[in-house]
Length: 231
Image (tube, rainbow, N blue to C red; front, side, top):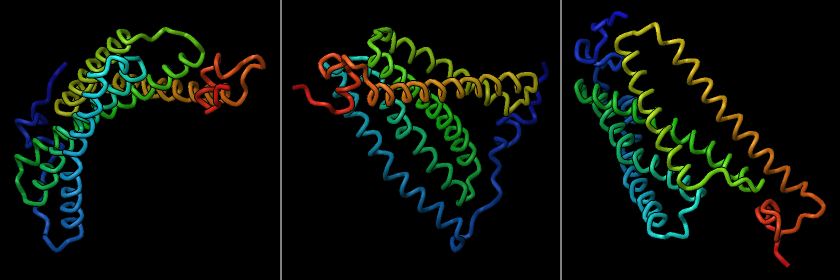
């Protein structure tokens, strides 16, 4: 396997993040970019603070340490780091573009693309886990415990991190031999998550509106989820 170091970020200006020039302050591109930076800069601390409160509430209340709330905490973690890393570096990336600072543009582009890809993939996986966990709960299968959820979350977080690093290496050094392997893995994982969510929510809706004849709100989580009162 040969590496083409001419495409390394150290040897070629951080391709593909190549600065084309400074935008004129009167252009629409400049104004839209500046507006997006202002909005993102305002939303970032809100995302950090809001999700920090969620994590603190779940961590500080033992009654909330259930698989459902642990998965909610997993979503809060991805949103927390999106506000802490992705959004601030997006602002750096876009401001550097319109001011012509190539090094900041390069670093901001790499961090923004890598972090957004990583946290988006992790969020998508956690959403699939939430759907599966709800299905298991409704069907009274206790396969997911708090410990298992934490292990699954940490395992896939590590796998996604390695995948992002490999993808960046592939982009910089053109490791053509792994392009097809990465494509198959990503598309297969995405299709599996979509299928899991579709099945879980389809079953959930069916169970809510077509309960067994003997089911009651006391015995059926599906009926309670639908909003039936307990008489």
